[in-house]
Image (cartoon, rainbow, N blue to C red):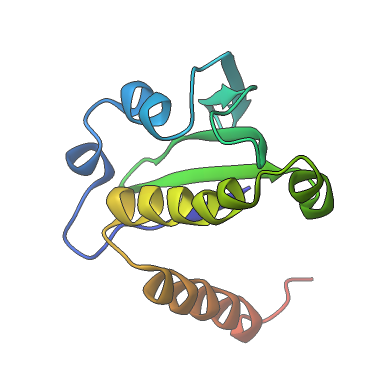
Length: 130
């Protein structure tokens, strides 16, 4: 499960006022919820795009900090998707994921990668606790 930060000065609830509706628009009908870090994330068991096997997504509140977007997309093996003739769906899957994340966070793919790198580097700089 990856958690994504919003662009500076922006909040997830402003960018996505209705998470349920937005998830269904991008990924398909919601089948239920799943607990994660004291919240409930939406589960899409049968996503619209045949490349996606399962999508878990929602808002993760952090008290005094800004909420983050949690997203986990399980994908089917590429060979299986191509063998079924869904080559265009594979291309579309990348676009759907990136469009959703950019709309939700206000950050493009490059900015999200850079942010993830910085958080990993920051964690590496912290001393280990004994």
